[in-house]
Amino acid sequence: MTYLEAAYRYETPPGEAELRAMDSVREVYGIQRIQFKEKERTVRVRFDASRLKGDAVAKLLRQAGIDVREQLALA
Image (cartoon, rainbow, N blue to C red; front, side, top):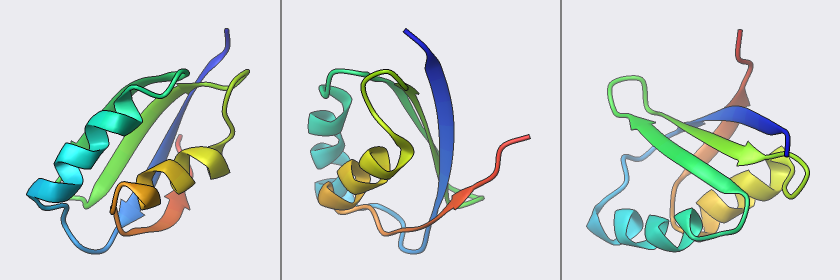
């Protein structure tokens, strides 16, 4: 397994329904950790790169109702 971390900027802060929907994203095989930073309006996801790609992770977030705008470069 090769774990990568991706960060995405979102526009609208997630509400209760979106946070509940995130439970289904956390259960996806290959997702290890999801961390929101409300002040920065970012969400960081650690995932298994042998199972998922960054685009697939962004799609999962969007399906959960997170208003993902862009993927950020991590230093």
